[in-house]
Length: 142
Image (tube, rainbow, N blue to C red):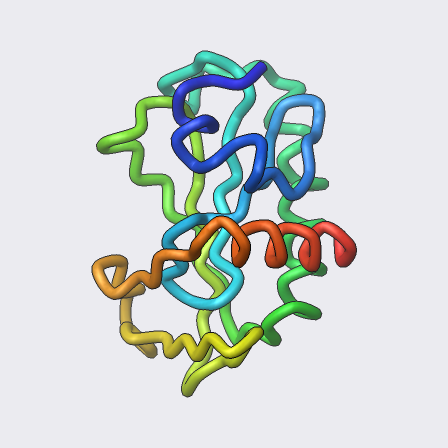
């Protein structure tokens, strides 16, 4: 299922990997290099409304994401933000955290909030080509 929240984050172009209950997407606005979205594939708008199977699968999703991002951007810490203020369906913003800057395909991204909370307002918008390239690279690592 593709709900409105998943579509807003660029599905299908941004889709890195689909699980039974979750979709992993490149976040079109990169807070830090490798920012992703893990979105529930259901219509649930409350975390507690997800089926037990989604909670069980979430561990597999998180392990796959962390393994891929460790290789992709060598993060030092990682934040999972469940904000759901604008986009109603259950989803997490995955923000790799690091001191300094990371380079990728001519793009330099600093972690503007390091070592405090992520600076969501300093996100860098990716164009369609960059989303496609990042999606493919992270997909290979998952």
